[in-house]
Image 1 (cartoon, rainbow, N blue to C red):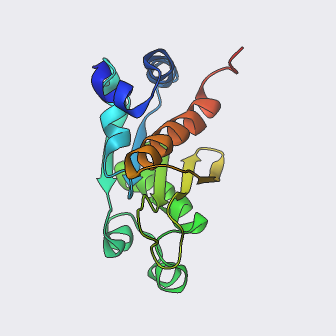
Image 2: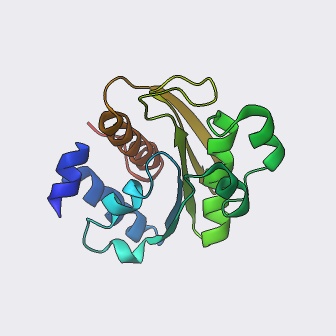
Length: 169
């Protein structure tokens, strides 16, 4: 259970609390992942009891799949490319809608080493869509592809935790 979480630098206790919080609220989550290619779902399923809260995930690594599977507006993709805050928002909303979940998580970015569509490596847009709307965060991470992807997983799960769990401290 902890090997993936350790590799991603995630706290087992925090993720366990997140899953327990979702269970206590009878809420579910789904993902639409680009640069993380399923790592968020993998992290969640490392926690016993996650089957009660994880509806599923869409791996939309290819740009066209962001539109066809997750429902991202094709005109948005054509105008701004796949790495844009609005794309992250639509990925989260699409995951929530298409998987029938309470919460949707969307991630898009450039893990590197090369830029994509003029966007620098380490640029990541994350979104959480829920009953009260959608919130988007942009990260700029340094390091290897693995570092950027791990930071992205941790950040989107923490963004969800901020909506589910009481404040830490």
